[in-house]
Length: 187
Image (cartoon, rainbow, N blue to C red; front, side):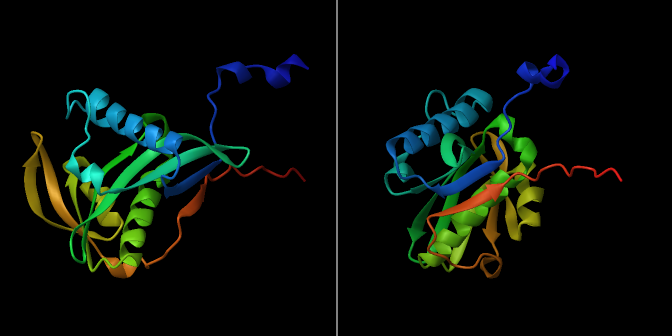
């Protein structure tokens, strides 16, 4: 009987369900800012203590949260969008917690939610300045690079989303399920 539970205490919790949505509650906004600080200040050292700027005053924050029993539990992804000029929207500060990057779909779903939300709000163009190591990922998601620039001492690409690949919607949340291993049937 003890062999069933052997090693269970050493395994990390792996959520099977995530929600991606506009940050609505105080805890979601707090988690959104905490994750950005963790990624951009602590991990990447792009900012000293906080990465907030004037864009945060007008931006729409979007989060990915892992769920426990169907309820959002912890913010593990973040991005913000804002209208830079009429019809031109920008996404920035895309971050996924290091422990959840292996899934690979959280960042893509945050991008999809960001662009589709902006498209639904009237975007005719959607732009972002993407760190060079993420350019291939964005290209696979139907983005085009317009060249390189240097921001915060790092190479970035000015990129634009192909809006035809991101249908406009008015949803305030979507769900993302972690693929589960298939169980083998023994004959």
